[in-house]
Image (cartoon, rainbow, N blue to C red; front, top):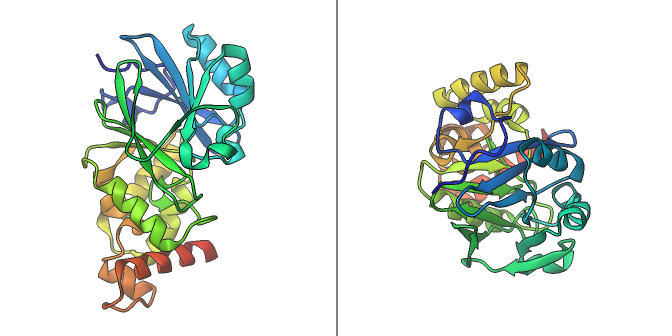
Length: 273
């Protein structure tokens, strides 16, 4: 049995997908946490809670408790709610073994490629370093749902605070090897600013133009632009398109340069934007 939608705060884009099992919880200014509920087992979890308050509110609205806290990486705006939520609900914290010393209250440390059962849902852990050295992403195979934290955003990717362009490119390539219809749930609402930048390096990309207009319409209504799909991201996310001739020309990257070099040029240009 698939996970049930936990609260009714999802955008119409998400709701139309029907198989979406997760509810978006707004935190801080632009962070997104995600409430998960497996109806078969009654298991409930939250991915990357920046703060406890919005999560507690969402749980109360649905009459749910909390069993697990899943962290993609150690940054405070993804783990800030751990301590209070763990104390209030006796929830267990799940996170990356490679960075377990920096995950507040971690109970279950998982390695790259390891699988773990969230109720009756199989979750696979993918090491995705680059933004931080210990970053992971969580992939739920049955619902084809991918929680990318600050590795992959819609039309963007995370800054390289602790990793290299090569590490991030390998991480992104690992994610894009998943099925094209995988739903991507990222950690921030950055899509509008990402679209503006992307249009400066691939202005003739029709799919990007269409996505940018869609994003504007959603944000004008204060609606989230998440989730997206891997198929869509491959069409308009410049960080997944280092092969684009237009992009390379915009950034003065030689045709003979490697994809890693082109990716690094895109990341550097975004950092300057």
